[in-house]
Amino acid sequence: MIILLGSTGYVGQVFQKRLSDRSIQWEALSGRQFTFANKADLVGSLKTKKASFLINCAGYTGKPNVDACELDKGNCLDGNAILPSVIREVCEEVGIGWGHVSSGCIFGSERPGGGGWREDDAPNFCFRQPPCSFYSGTKALGEEMLGWRAADRGDEWPAWEHESEATGYVWRLRIPFNEIDGPRNYLSKLQRYENLLQARNSLSHLEDFVEACWSCVEKEVPYGIYNVTNPG
Image 1 (cartoon, rainbow, N blue to C red):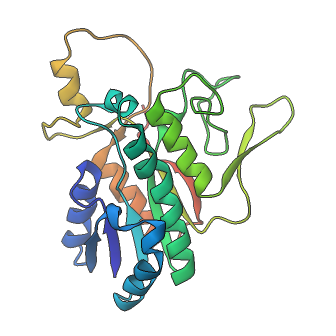
Image 2: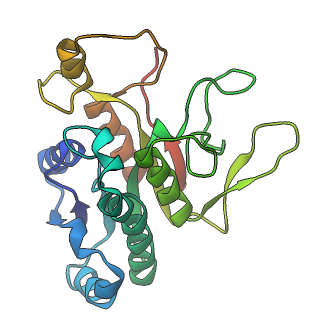
């Protein structure tokens, strides 16, 4: 049984469809249920449901956009940093793997030396490397709550290493889009903006993203961080 958090969201709906199309048993749970106060109940619930893996698509992005996170910092912190921590603890106690949808927004501008930001690079757009948006800060903090830490590697940009051994996946999404018009779709946003700027960035086609994430689970790819973006 696959447990899916955030099943009604922009990313969660695509996970939901992918699992259903493949006749894979899944059940939705609300991310709001995952609090430290409910930890014992959640452990019991996952055991009762015979959960084999948990996918977390829940988080706080703000409405109508991430700028709203600056005005609702408590919920932003809960959804993007505290929730992943609870998920990790609960899943480790139950003995199942997990996959957490993170974000590439924890990086800004170009990587020193070029070549693009890697999974083993420490974030440079976060609370520890200000200035940053509050949203990006909480997403980077969420990865810290899952066990990752910055580590010195001499002249190179600091590494992003796990404190022990990863027990789940961190899938980084960046500027999602697909062919369906909607408020979260990057292509839809572009058509509605009055002004545009020229900048290079990474993109994630939503269906490709979900397919790649699920392939990690199916093929038992080693746990860790994966930048799940499209080439080009």
